[in-house]
Length: 232
Image 1 (tube, rainbow, N blue to C red):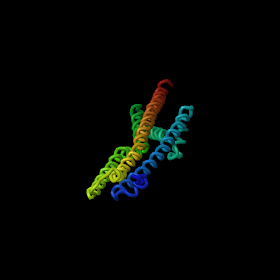
Image 2 (cartoon, rainbow, N blue to C red; image 1 turned 30 degrees about the vertical axis):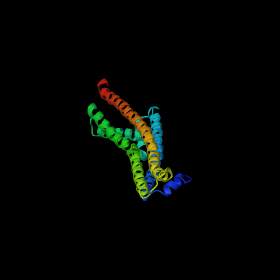
Image 3 (tube, rainbow, N blue to C red; image 1 turned 90 degrees about the vertical axis):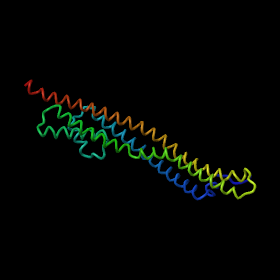
Image 4 (tube, one colour; image 1 turned 90 degrees about the horizontal axis):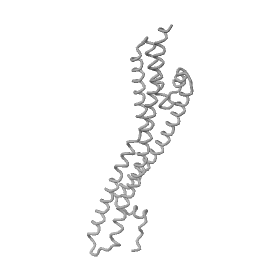
């Protein structure tokens, strides 16, 4: 009963298949943590850039000045700034084409902003499906390693004439390590996925609200410009 049942000893003495499963799960776990930190920094950057642009937008700056700044370095701006630039660019193009119908102008600007919104959300949701896959698949991969390890252990016990707990315990213990590693990979991925999905939903709602608010501002500008000739 004085056998070494440390985790390292169990891993080194596991069967080849179980060791391969453990190695795969460790690679998945490392990749999952890398994706978690990358997504955490990316979402924090998106939130920060959106807040900066929104403060500038509501500070009283003219739409033309905001559009000029957004057009200079679009890659350095946030998603909300690029959505604004898309709507403003389409609005100005249609005005240059002498489009005067308010409905046509607003529909064009909204379509441009919705298309930009979808592109930005696709970027924001990058790697989220990977975390979902890790959270759902890793426990089953670990369970496969455990089942295989137990089968291997009992196959070895078939050749023994006397079986005791001391002979059974190491084989089962090394097999269960695979399940433990699978859970170690899955739990952080599930927690991170739920957290990021909630944050992304908030970002999406925030940006959709901005699209509606900016559309209302454009609508008021169009209405004011259309009323000017009649009051002259």
